[in-house]
Image (tube, rainbow, N blue to C red; front, side, top):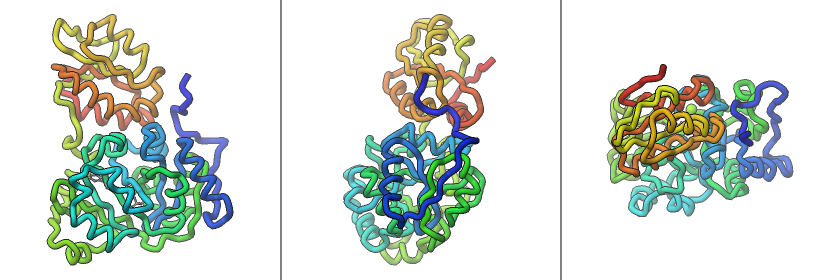
Length: 348
Ligand code: TXA
Ligand code: MG
C-alpha cells in the first residue's frame, strides 16, 4: 500500500478559506507544505497552488489536483534573493543582469529562467535543464515561504484550462473539492501572471508577457529578444518535444508484450513492481531497471518519471522499454511524456 493518495480527494473534503492575517494561519499552512500537502496562497499576480519544491511527490500532487494533461514547468517561489544561488548554476547566479533585475524588480511579477542545479527535482521543471524563479511581492506569500523554510513550487491555482484566480473564492470554486486550505489575502493587486524572462546561458528572451512590462526590463538590461508566439510556445514545454527525451531509443510496451532484450543493452522503466517482474520474465534480462512506484501509484509514478528516465539514460543503453500507465489523472501527463519520448509503441 502506498501512503500517497492515487487520486486527489473529491467528496468529503472542502477547502477551508482562512485569512492569512489571522494568528497561526501562516504557521499552519507552512506545516502542511512541509508535510507534503499543496496549499493555495495569494501573490500579487494571481493565487498559486504551492508545494515544497524539493519534494517530488508533493509537486506531482499539484499536477493531479490541477488535472493537467501533461507536465508544464512550475515557477519556484523564494523569499529572498539570497536563496537564488542555491537553485541555479554558479554561472547563471553570477550573471550581472540577474542581479540588476532582482535588485530593481524583486519582489515583483518577474520570473527569471536560469540553468538549474541538481537539487531542483526534474518534475518541477518538466525535465528541463532550466528553472523559473521569482520572489512574489505579497507579505503573506513571503511569510509563508519563510515559515515553510523551503522554496515553494507553484502554478496558478486554477484547474487546467480554467481562468487564473485573483481571489480566494475563485480558487475555492475551481479546486475547493481537492485541497485542504486556501490562505486568503484578498484580491490580487496585479491580476495577471508574472513576466517570464529566459536568461539561461547568456540569452535574454521574453517567454511570457506579464505583470512587469518589457520596457522596464529593457531599460534595466538592454534589448530582450521577443520571439514569435509560435517560437515562445515551442519553449514552453508541454507543447513540444523540445523538453527532455532520452538518448536511448524508447519503446512503449506493456509488461505482457515486452520485447526480448536479445543480448542488447536494454533498460526497463517499470510502472510498478508486478510490472517489473512480468517484464523480466517475458523480455529480460535488462541492463538497468527503474521501478517508478512499488504499487503503480500515479502520483509516485509522475514524481519519479523524469528522474528515472535520466538514471536509465546514464546507464548507456541502446533501448529503454517503458510501461504504459492508465490514462486517467496524472497518468495522462505521464503517457503524454512517454509518447513524446517514444520511438516505438506496442501497447496491445
Ligand atoms: O504570476 C505567476 O507567475 C503565477 C504566480 C502563482 O506566481 N504563477 C504562474 O504559474 O502563472 P503557471 O504555472 O501558471 O505558469 C508558469 C509559466 C508557464 O507558461 C511555464 O511554461 C513557464 O512559466 N515556465 C516555468 N518554468 C519554465 C522554464 N524552466 N522554461 C520555460 N518556461 C517556464
Ligand atoms: Mg497558469
